[in-house]
Length: 436
Image 1 (cartoon, rainbow, N blue to C red):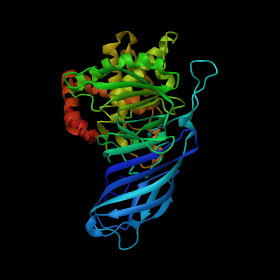
Image 2: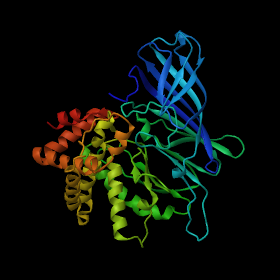
Image 3: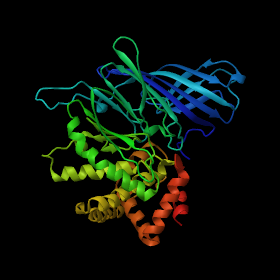
Image 4: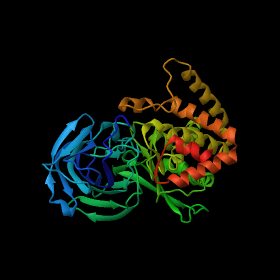
């Protein structure tokens, strides 16, 4: 496919470690990637942007020789590590890079607390979405079909919180004023779904989501907000167990991650992002109180459902390439409308579906209209795919599929699709095969 990395180098596992002080302008990291080489080569191409790489080494399998330092080359959004001749024969290897990062202003913010004049310290919320990986600055194989486990540790100031996709498994002192928090390995994920946060966050624990027929164990549920804002996230947390239970019932597949955090991120550049186990939102979408207008309450619920629907379509099953972005976004839009009609019929999501389809048809009538499943040849094509054609028209087309084959047949097809491709990737052909 155009724009893809070479297929002869396949990542198998990442190990990420970062040292972060949100009060500073930069932080440092180390990325180790276990790679399977399918052909002999003296170099590896990876994605990387705005990296300050200080050291790269490539270690072949034990039978092939010693660790070699690698030259570093940056070319646009790609970077290369090149070792000396003769390079490596087809086998496993490990690429190890030390790098620095500039904190992105869109992800760093001082947020007013509940007491006038009280201001919390800066917080860092680092995740990624789309071609440029706006804040996740690591060397990586940044394509959605490359799903691998990730090991992550964060070294942060002692009084700060360290948070990520999975449950923290240990916290140890790391020198004066620092601690290192290590997290459980993730299930296989693409790089764009890895997320972490550091800083003086409020962490709001609520009762775990109870077990369901599809999920035998209770699942921890928390809210994350800037210091002083924690109490306002409780309404969003209270509605979450019913949403998860409804999605599990539809897919006949339990919530697939070890915990669920809803994160109200100050200055978050996107509306929300479906990072598994660590879902990030613009803070106002989660921070509600008795004075919140009804429109905000409804939009908070709808956005929460959309992002939680992604935990199945997008996270557990990921598009193989960006031309099938609609498998993520159209399904989440369609499912949000279905779950909202079930849990909050007074929100009239059925009318939202109609108005959304009409708006999409207006765009579809233009000469410049594109396909739902548009060929992707570069980063710009990925960015422009996040639009009403993908979301609203895609959701309307899925509703047409469902109406044509019947709700029961469509649901059984979706269950088969999720079960067959869980923790892997899929294409539009896979979906059609499951429903047909």
